[in-house]
Image (cartoon, rainbow, N blue to C red; front, top):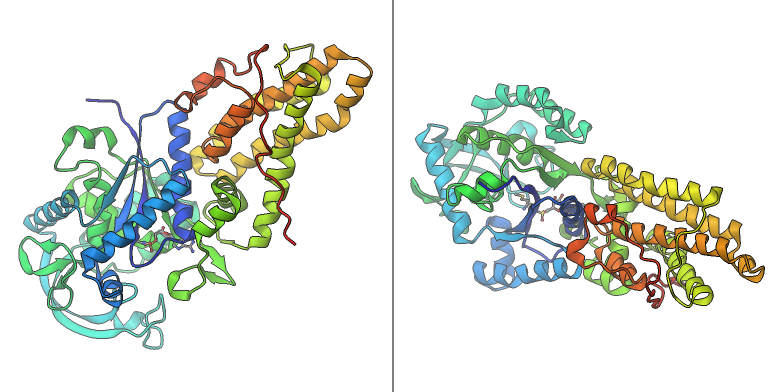
Length: 512
Ligand code: MSP
């Protein structure tokens, strides 16, 4: 058997509409972690994809005058284009309409049915089409769906049910005994809260007289599978459960399911019970992040308040976009997106702090040393303080990133960048040059180049494109595949090599 891979998943995005920044957020976060784990030398399996069945998608296909499969085929490339535009390094992209997924869903259904965990019953309830959810009467709010406040339809029909209730106590105990399973902690408490109420069995079928766009249930040809039951299974169909044992053993248990807080219940209640009933180990961590809001409410297609990520990339570049989403809010909490705040952060952190440090340092190396990296000189107190800060950085990143604490990781990198900028102001290299204090100047330029070189590599998971550009301008002899923490340990700067100054990496945005 091969060695255990680091396995991270994004949710599968609904293809009823074009991608927006909420989707980009989850994907960028997963990509950052995948890149960081690769830097640590891990074999990574990063799975993403699209959720293509169900009423909502069927409606959108009809609205577009297309057969459902033609409609989903036309939307999937938009997601793939966006991931390309954001340099998302996924290893596999799974579509729920693919045979490998359909076969696995049917196998899961057949196994659970045979085991007696799926049974047939009459269903009476209120159905919310936008949310694809049945609600008991007592949970309706003023007769409307408690989640999206849309009108619900009363329905009575024969369906198949999955015995969630049988496993409620087991799940409650598991969550209590496994603190890191649901993260952040306040989300774990929220799930324990749901589990205080009796859990209803989950209706996992839809009669195909009402909905035909779904995966056929192998023991009930007149029903298709409920879209959530279908979609969750991607996490195992995408890594070989029931079809490729070697791959499955290398990947499972999954290290991280990264999701938004709106889809916590299916992930933290249905999914663990499905796996447990199948006899499959549970994932290590389910992490639920917050929402990006616009004008006080969640950004979503149905509210018509979405920001088009393609537009932001076009205007400001993928690096700044990735940086902003990961830096601006603590992962797990909500944030408000505004172009004004985006520009402030761009001009401050990226143009003034990082971009300027790179540009002014390279300009000085060209001016004072003909563009050649000087030898390490005798460090003065301030050089040493900066060097110590730099040396402390990997430990901070290794503390924060495995907890998906993106903004603290970036804040730690920027602390060093800011100290380097202050060091320039205080040490006045132009003065040193005038006074011909060449040894001091050499030492100063060397430490600044060292800070920039290490920073270029540390920011790789967050802004891979910017990192590669910095590597190029600094003249470092490193290929993308060699960006690892091992490589960092063996030193980066080679005195005597030429730098390669280019244009500023983040030119200031004039917002007027
Ligand atoms: N198809 C389901 C997930 C199935 S996973 C087996 C789904 N799709 S979705 O397209 O609606 O949402 C995908 C992800 O995008 C979710 O994690 C969701 O939280 C995230 N976001 C959608 N809008 C968002 C914001 N406005 N802000 C942040 N993320 C949000 O749910």
